[in-house]
Length: 137
Image: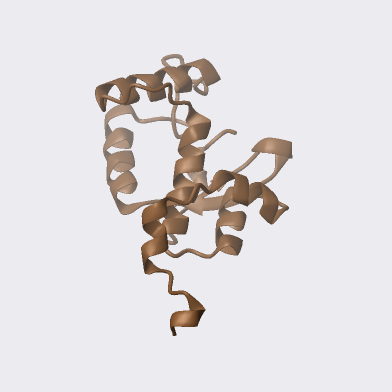
């Protein structure tokens, strides 16, 4: 996956993800908070082509991204091993818990099958509190 500067759409609050798994394209959400941070990052580092560039201007390597995620986890005092792909699972779980329907999540994750999406969404027990049993209605 490679993110270029042109892939960020702040008007629609979307990011185009190109060349993801199986060379697919999909859109994912751009948060207001991330947009503020991205703008500050852009002003400071002035990337030329890619949203995140290494010291020599090329794209970040996979290992560099893993190191960033690992350092952030340690800073947050998370003791278990965290990978970039786990962030994808967390995103899916949180938007599901926020009442986003499975089909929308499927599109955001770029899955052909809802079965793949279901693997990424780990529903917590607390999310069941808002679900009403039809027998009680």
